Image 1: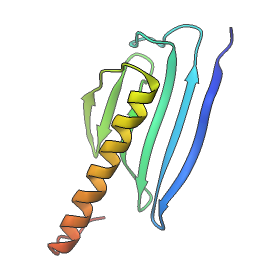
Image 2 (image 1 turned 30 degrees about the vertical axis):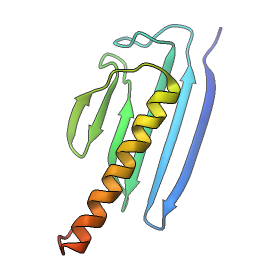
Image 3 (image 1 turned 90 degrees about the vertical axis):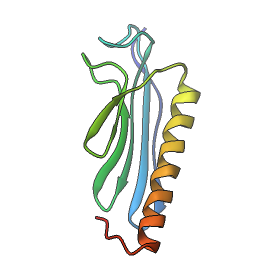
Image 4 (image 1 turned 60 degrees about the vertical axis):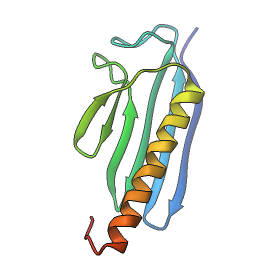
Length: 106
């Protein structure tokens, strides 16, 4: 079996923000992961990637929030997307609250 792209979508969620979701089913797990998927999910705001989930070869499953990297426990593609979208909503909420308080963001 060769790699099969499950989806590759870019969705604009605001004039200055979008999410990009790319997931492949691969014949063998990438080094560092224990499942047959290769993925990258990104949230870009004002031309800056502020949130990313991926399983880079050798690093395994993890997420980036700002400049900090955290481990991520992969269970299923549906849960991966749900967790990512929850973090996107949380980030948008925090940005909205900061704006209401007069805190400048990028």
